[in-house]
Image 1: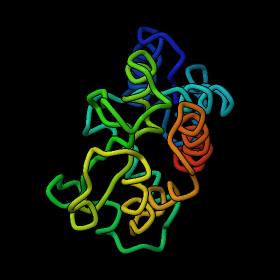
Image 2: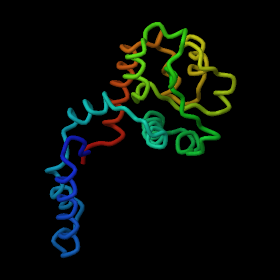
Image 3: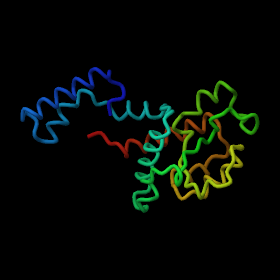
Image 4: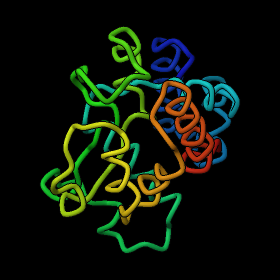
Length: 185
């Protein structure tokens, strides 16, 4: 993971490594890893960046959540976690994308803007499990999350309400899971 390095430095490191591969100077995986170590970030830095990540692109959010789900439940059938069809697996915003008028007293307009695209505010649901769920309050949504066959989503049942603190707590847990999902080489 190279989240905190400058993109020019990343591009230069990859270009240098590609040249060395082409010229036969790098032939083994361990040599490639060594050549790219200068752009790696520590687990601590990766976890910190992940714990504060915002994702506005649905496809990227789905990918990240699918990979986290696979790490959390590796023995599940592939269709449970690899499915990319938005008609079968939906991306759900726990706190709705549009600022709700009622039911979300823990958020004002400013905190809504700050938290609505945080990774901790997103989850995957099978469309069949999402049928009938509205953009209502967290207590109204919670039963749908609790009965989800997706482990990372069903864990939302642990929260009594949805607040910035609980969202941050969930995202820190996802960041810890991300270290297992994308380990440093």
